[in-house]
Length: 472
Image 1 (cartoon, rainbow, N blue to C red):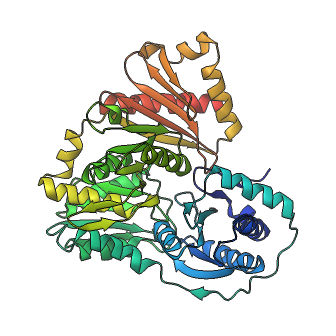
Image 2 (image 1 turned 30 degrees about the vertical axis):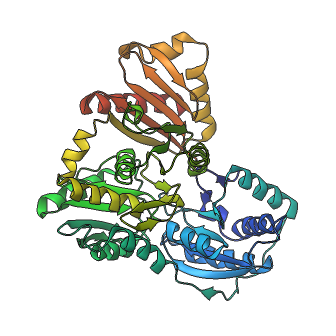
Image 3 (image 1 turned 120 degrees about the horizontal axis):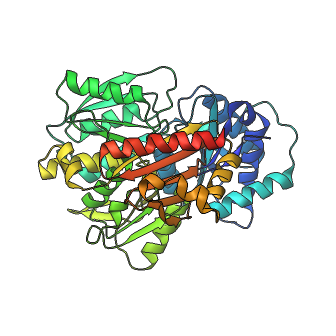
């Protein structure tokens, strides 16, 4: 059985099952979808990639598939995913990003974009239908010669122009570069806004930094860097630079949904759209005029943003628990306009959070405390097939009170369930536990909320162990 599947954002799977005919044939299917019923579709398709070891080869095969489909591949090189998406929207053409985002180097993926933005679930179904209809069984050697295009400069200028040259004046910002494709772009933009960027931890090999399940060594590095020098913050991204990491002055990372909320606050959003996995504090009355909850995945957030805008929201900001922020409407401030960019982006939340810090004149640790978020933690069990996760969730949600309630009896039992994505259980003591299958890898995700850090850590450990026992 192939590991290739559309998940929360794009097609993902093992490199051994993606490279060659599978990547070629899925791109051919995407190109067929573009041309089917769209006489105005431009001939160009932009191609970008991240820094993992398999991406250059797959990008060459993607370019060949585009050419063989009768379209024109344009090589944007190694570039952040949101920069590629912005270039595609600006030029009015499609784009394909070769990236596995945060997943390990033995895996990779393809993210597909129409000229209007990233594809939705309907488009995914069309691609799969075209893939089956084409039935390709062979591919030529990759020999396509693609013209090149600079997709990075306009992306950096977008933020330098909107925030202004003194927005971050006086800040010293550690930049955990690792193997992020946006590592240099972040430093350049921070400097353009008046901050002093300090590059840290650059790596020549790919490091799978997951903003939703940080490795202990990443957290230890941040604390070490913060203790060794005076830093206002440490920032980073995942592999394709569409999900941010922001740490306070002590090297403690802020949760992604808090970074998203701070971004929405800075931009004066009157509607936010966020998955059910984001912190329950976001629903607190008075925080935002409107909160729309969705399933996990940028396609669902994009749909929710469109809904909010159609119902009259002026400034719509979407974000996920992993920190990726999607801008669903234009924002005007002091005569400067930041156009909508309805795809996950790491640069906007990093800059907005730091600009909010400057405006309030507070340490990030103070701002995080004042936000009053519930203590929320998450982690994952790797190499858990999705059918096992589904079986666990089905048992928890079945009409079997012995299994369901005994598992959580120490917390007073289950008092409410949310089935929008996996299963989110509210317990009698006010804590929550959420189980869901990752859309990108064979992983079981576990999210918890509790009143204190100690209780949250214990609840997470308890339920990781519980899930492991039930799925192995």
